[in-house]
Length: 167
Image (tube, rainbow, N blue to C red; front, side, top):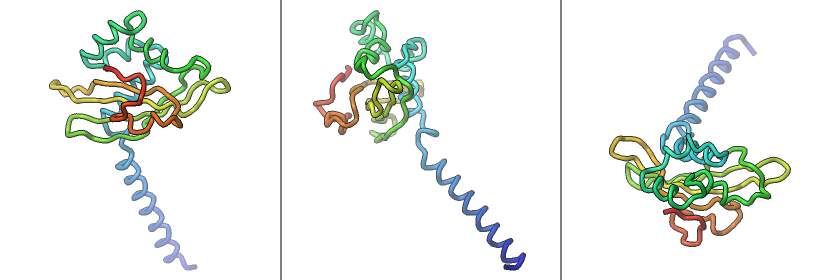
């Protein structure tokens, strides 16, 4: 193979890599959508008991509900209480999928992994995230916090069988 041919092959590979990288960034919504970031940040904070981070990510209605209904008035205590103790502590929640509901709302599903050797992977949760008048995204509803293999984890935004629905 001549040097001219190698140059064209190398140039083609570089172009292909750049196209793949740009497409990956464009098609990775959790990296670019603030609603997905809010849902993920809330679950990771609440799941580890970080109420200082979790609570402000809720809208006023959810904050009032948590203050009145969760142990010690903490949303993180509710979230931690939904997940069976035998699954262990939360390791990390990540974006699973989402559907838009107009320009200012998303129905976001996350999948989480619990503590190694004592827990389960595939803990699914649902969050309704809406953009408020001040352009800040906040959680307006949550549900789920159950094993993803459970039928009640399907279509959590509209599934009346999904547990732990608030408000």
